[in-house]
Image (cartoon, rainbow, N blue to C red; front, side, top):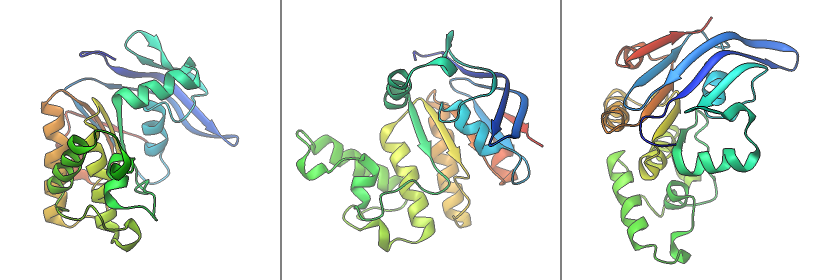
Length: 215
């Protein structure tokens, strides 16, 4: 996906186990823009977020990346898109419990990664950005919920994906850390990334360029 390319959901419907989760919803992710998905629990915020990230198949409508019908992509095409462009911040943190913080940020054992020095520096910088400086060697299993959430955000900072999908990124954070993390996310938007946030945090949603309320 090149600069200026959008991820667009057009008239999307999603049915899971015979239940209609989303019906006829459209949304657009554009470079340098932020989108908040809001609504009550069960309204389909995470489901739509996952559809935009090509993690959730759609039952109707389309997901396009640029002019490409991405909802029809094969596994290899989706994996390349995830590898080259996407940064995910999962609500359940998406961490490997018995690995170190550094491993979870880089998704690689840096001690055996050839040419790893620049990556180690990138991991340190990403952790410093989320207030976890010096915690590279800690095991994820020893961290609090808020610290785990910040590790997940550090992973997105480290990857510098040009499309960022964040599911409740501030839910487990105190006020100071919420502000710091929001600042990091919107800084990436100013640098040209496309950002979608599924959130109950209405203050965070109000800072986005557009808000889509699901019901």
